[in-house]
Length: 272
Length: 283
Image (cartoon, each protein chain N blue to C red):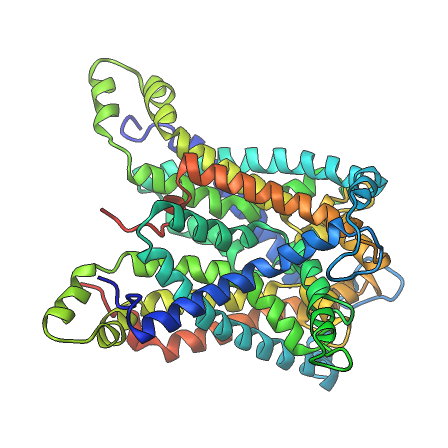
């Protein structure tokens, strides 16, 4: 029985509060959606006439298109590298004791607490010092470091729930360690690997502050292009592209929740 | 090495990433003690003048404002987030649970730009709230939300709420419901059971949530930049301005170092102040 059953006064008040906070959470995306479909360039609530012209304008705007392409390149590289690095390390963390284990883990997780602008500035200085231009390499590196904790967590949780007897059975039947890894461990870990990759990809695609420091004109990602747009123009094309962003992110997360169990990855499920 | 197959192959890439991050931080540390040569991207000799310059009232003010905004945001987020986390963990129907989870988590993955822009539309002088209130005749002229600390904190709470809810829910989910039942069977009212059993047991989650919210708020850039509009400045805005408007990377680095030091110091203080709750609920 819950402490806040509906029939009690604190129960009703807390229910009201929960609804209010959820309203607070969905108000901005809701308002942006209305603004995006509004025909007029000036904001007006409620809109007098609906249209799709801002979507058309956003989708044909050169900087957004180029930004989207850059974002795609950065996201695919960064999330795939992070998946490989993170999954391998999570495996080692789960199975083995080795020197500097906690040190490496601590450093990698520290990117959760270090401000993104600090990480961006650091990689920018490194790029300047070793004389590489502001190409994709430095952007991808920064993104890998930023999303790695999420991959680690996701894969580590799957490894904790992993039945190792299946590996032992395969090994006792004469399978080599490599064969066990490829035919038993990795296939069974697929949901964890997939959710780790998906979280990393979503985060990388949305990353802004560090990208602002490490991207140049040529490597400008979509969030950076959007930021530059907001600073210069005030028309609702930005609202239109935001709606596409919000819809895509919510859809991917719903998918992740249905097929991969977001609650488990985020550790908010009650253990049974 | 038969007992530890693939060890080197699995650890090396992660170690390289760790080295990369350490190198980036070392680069900042090194630049923070170099002189700035106007008009040049190359830093000059070693000096402590950057840190001395930080003591100017102009910069101290930004640090104090930043700390204040971070604290306000962290505690507002805690108050807003706790009931949501509780509802999330208590929800029985998978559909309700999934819905709350998606609504809460989606903003976490939406970049700062989209979220901040949404708030600009909500809070602007011709934005949603002001249009609504004007139309209803409740106000005669728009309320100024933009360029105020209130507006910035409101948007920042929206940014940090998801991570707070996740941390609190993780703590709440791992509290054995038998404790609350035991309290009830001994005659405690549900409210009393919650206040004396569940709330203290979730203390580690509260501490983790507040510290993370603090660190995330400190990391925010687009929100203070766009909603603060130059009138509410945080350390991040100053770092960017110095780095990209005047190319004074050594001073930007010094600001970053001081910012990190301040974050760790304040987080340390929060930890120290709450230490007695840390071990609550551990067996």
